[in-house]
Structures are given as structure tokens and as C-alpha cells.
Length: 278
Image (cartoon, rainbow, N blue to C red):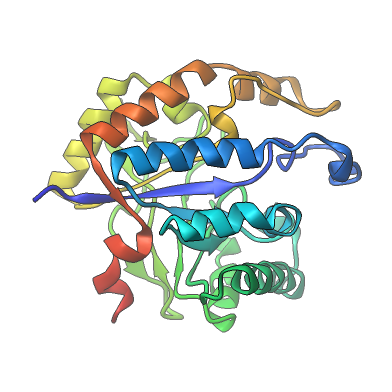
């Protein structure tokens, strides 16, 4: 029987990755694409018989409640991506707790199901930010899929956890997959941003199969906006971010289709049911 990998989707609008000092000031005036992008994803998953965990931003859930209800009705897991898409490191403990709690309330109200998981916007990549894990446990969450102790740009690192593990507070961590010692570094290969867009499919496929044999299931992720052929950015966005969002977009959809054809995907709650039952 084929190993089921965990497919995860970070549900946010194209403008939530806002780099300006006045971030969020005009979000309500910007065109939304999330409903159409998620609809395409749901059609792809239904055609492949796949299920996923959708880490939904609270801001999206309030603006587009029908999107959340459609995801849940299709049998996918709803988890939290926080509320306002802010880096954890820019928040204090109480502020972070309020942000996550707000998202949990709106998601639970829309679905009628208790939310079990969380993924931080921009991930967590510093050990000194792991206080956030304790806050998640205090809020009643059961797992995190955020911690990737690597440098951002060029997004590589030397010491990466590969198997699920529990934090001291009891919360499970389900880490992203990394190809071990690729050219002397550990290379992330199965995620959104430039990874599904830039890396050759053969490398992604081979790395996933190697992960299956050495570790077991892997956590793959993408963003709905990456399926949109148009790269939208806000005025004031740094040039390198504009380039990062534009390059390789035409490869995301074909790569995702091939992954859905060649591998089995389920939600985190299904793939790691044994761990979460402990």
C-alpha cells in the first residue's frame, strides 16, 4: 500500500504577504482571488481523490466564509494560519495568543469542528521564537507545522529535524521535508514559494521517494495564489520579492498535477493519526 503524504495549503490572499510599513491599510480595497484559487485546488484534489489540510488565515475566513465552508464540505481538514499574517517574531506573547485565538474562533464557528493544528505565517526558523509553541498548547492546539530552523534566502540549513516529534509542552511538530546533505546543505524541496516553481520535477519526485524510505510521510505545502498565472504585488514591495513571486509560476500547476498523480495525499490529521492519538 502506498504511503500517504500530508498535503498542506496555506490559504491567504496574494496581498497578505505585505511588506509595507502601513501593512493592511488597504486590504479591503484590493481584488480578491482566493475563492477562485481555492476552487481550482479543490477541483484538482477531487479529481485525484486526495485530501489536504488547509491552514486558513482568519482574515480570509471573515471576508470569504463560503470558501472555508466549501473546503470543509469537501472533506478536508481546516487548521489555523493565524489571523493577520504577521511574523511571530514581531509579536509579544499576549498579542500572538490573541491573534491565534481570533482565528480559532472564526474557523470553529464556520465549521463546527475544533481546530487541531497551526502553521505560522513565514514559518518559525529561530529557536528563540519557540515560546510560541507553548502558547499554542495553552490554546488547546495539538500540533504545529511551522518550525523550519533554516536561513531564509537562500532557505537552506545544516541541522534539520526530519521526523515528527513532541515539544516539551506536548504539542506535536510535523516538520517540512528536506533533502539531506544536498551539495553540502539540507535543501527544502516540497513546498511553496520557489520550491515547487523552480526545482525540476524529477528532483522533487526523487526526494519524496527517498524520504518515504528513510523517514516515512512528508509534509508538502503550497499557496493558492501560486496557481494564478498573474503575479500581483503591492506598491512598495521590495524588488527581490516581486521577482520571487513572478518567476516560475507557470510550473506550479503542472508540478502539482504530477505530484497528485504519482503520490497519495491526505490531511495531517489522517497521515499522523497515530501520533495525535497519543
